[in-house]
Image (cartoon, rainbow, N blue to C red; front, side, top):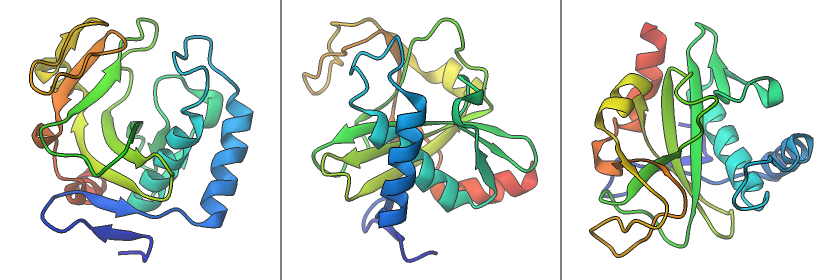
Length: 183
């Protein structure tokens, strides 16, 4: 495993520590993207998202970033598997009972093959690659919550309509490279 990655002790997560070049590339991609019309964070989450994409791109090793050419996925592998990367900000390392979430976007929902979920430390010095799930499985297993609804376990209130699944129900990220080789 590359020195930027390390297994998180006591979990299935992989920690990624971005390099100076990663920050530079994330800033460039973020600038190229601009602020999306439906962004509830008004663009403040772009760097986190771009760093998440870079982490996954480096971790799996055979994917290409799609840039702004697709709204349905972020990466595509040599075999044509499309991957949507979802990165959420976090203050601390996430717990398995926390939720992996996909915001409800009616125009381009679920037009990817799989999702990879991450959390990014507020300082952007560490990201945790949490796991992955095939899109068809996510659609069947995730629970839809409307904005303003509580999650029922931690007192967290959902900010936007979306689909949610506990992190512990994702596939181990360490299994993803092998799965992609079999596609």
